[in-house]
Image 1 (spheres, rainbow, N blue to C red):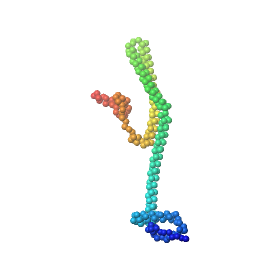
Image 2 (tube, rainbow, N blue to C red):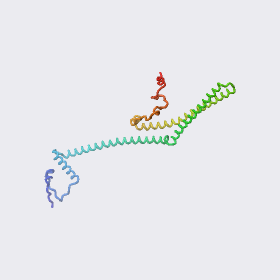
Image 3 (cartoon, helix red, strand yellow):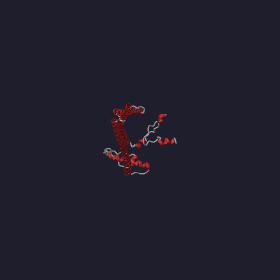
Image 4 (cartoon, one colour):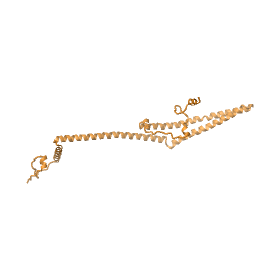
Length: 253
């Protein structure tokens, strides 16, 4: 037996009069229930705003909101893609820098290579000192022999002194051979320094070049005091900050 269901006032206010539904009838489908809920929500919103909202306007508004949300997601995806590109560039720069450092460590900064460079420089200093001492001793002997030669009259003594002078001159020529060995040793050191400089410049170019590196460099202050502050070494061609011979002569004019 079918029993008529009582209609509530809220249903009459929003939906209107509808025929009663028997308890034994089949219930509505899911999509029908959802459609009714959307309609009720639209009607409630229209009541609050005072403007009635039709199902078409409700659908249009939901579509607009979905499009706005989609645009927001799209913009966020674009930002993520840009960030990924920047991170890839940073990763590539770090990888290349590590490669350059590995090359420097393997070819120049390991203990064997640096010990070799130090040994070459030490040999240059020792060879130069030894040759200088030999030249000074020969020069002193030549001076003494020349003085004695001017005083003796015996031909035999003059011959002996002349031979000694010639022997000392040959000794000076032999000592001057240090320049060739010194040049070879310094060339090895310079090749190592050029190799290091090349890879350092390569790392600087990876991170934007010299100008970009200079922007992060801290000011260099001369912390030397006393005589050490005045010692700047011999002047190289094109160096500034050194007094020329003309400047020194002008002080005595």
